[in-house]
Image (cartoon, rainbow, N blue to C red; front, side, top):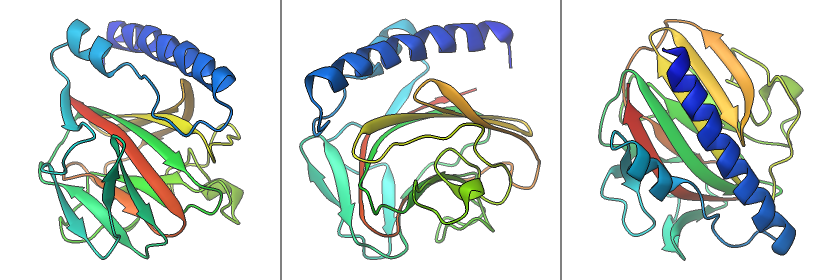
Length: 213
């Protein structure tokens, strides 16, 4: 991956972070969708593809009974157990950007390069966790489950957040709200669909976009 790509990525995320900070100051509950960099990204780089725009789930298959419902430009699931939205497409090298909101008791995650499009687990995919309250600090939000503990402590509950997940070859980089939280060199899983999880509590996913690399 070129250094130039990371440079422009840093500028884009910095702009997004500053914009989101302004939103948080004006709306302490952060109940509305963030005005993220979706449109700016598409205008500056046509390589981005929007897979969820807040209006339909045509790019995903649902696994399990998650009661997924589209509300106010996001999709929400409550108190599910092992439910997933699995992408219909399969991807090898990519930059995935996911906006999410997690409740206090939320257990969720973004699974990438899954080996099986009918199930998702840390055994068959890389799981980038969304679980602030995990009893094991090494598996909390920002981690790559079973591989890398989060580099920094984050508190995401009750806020809109953005994951930037970059997978190229054997390297995976996880960026949460503009901060790198995990880096991994591993070749266990090299391609496959990605999945959005609902496994307890309330989870909302906003814009989901992907850029093949």
